Length: 399
Image (cartoon, rainbow, N blue to C red):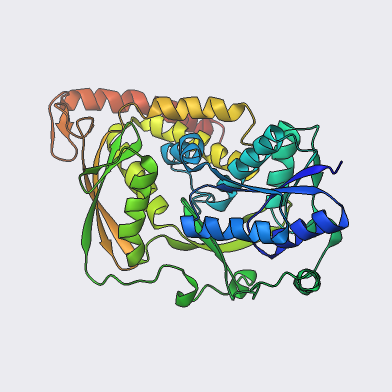
């Protein structure tokens, strides 16, 4: 009886090769599965399924984990205003963890002997898949033909042609990975430190010409309304922001960072909805959170993003950080107005019953109602004591 293997299948060249190779060379019974985190349309998913069966898959599964991805990851990235290196909304890297978890869970459900993926040996994804598979199912063998055999594109294409499978595997000028939480763009320019992506490389082109007002509503830190329209599904709300803002070319940037495997990497991206939602959310927090809430939340959120990128999502400390982030959002409720322009935006203001600027104690730079001039004089005198003592000691010691 043939061994059963579940292959994480995208329909691209590497995973297409894996289906044929695992079936015809190794004699496996191949079950293909794609975990959709919101980046594929129904038509694309149907095409991927058709391709899997043409290649010889015994069974194909489409695992829709978009809502789970929001609830278990995106939500907390918004709570923490997570941007890797202050730039990148951790788009593809966060998706891969959840795709890996869905694939290995499916492998356990169908009783697979092995699980396979098409990652090469040059990037982060191989670590994310391997690590997740090993933690969640150490008894299941991991197979990685593309990585282990160090294959070229030409070899894979010819291998498939020789076995009667022909498809358009023309290498596009730019590699596009579209997702709910942003789209990564790789090309020859991203390989050179002194270059950047040209306008035509971005999937969403700038079509808007005039200014537009966008109002994003939050309830306890989660997006709830877009221009006054309430969304039961947070995923739909994110897509609504994307539909409005992407035509302005907002959220484009270039991320440079350290990879899990130790080298520096560079990738372009466009993420209109993520960048606007995070910016609006952080803006609202400035009005509704205390100074120290903001400070400490920034510290742990930075670690949260790091662990997520480094494939450490399953570490229990992540649940601890999530608990803090969730609790911090109790008063982050309100509406943020944003003005959109081609390639830029302005955060206008907020409306919130938790706005700490609306206080009976005073108005900054205008009037104080809860203290006197003498109160301030005494406060600053006491506050100065530690440094007065320090510099007096320095003077005594001739410094």
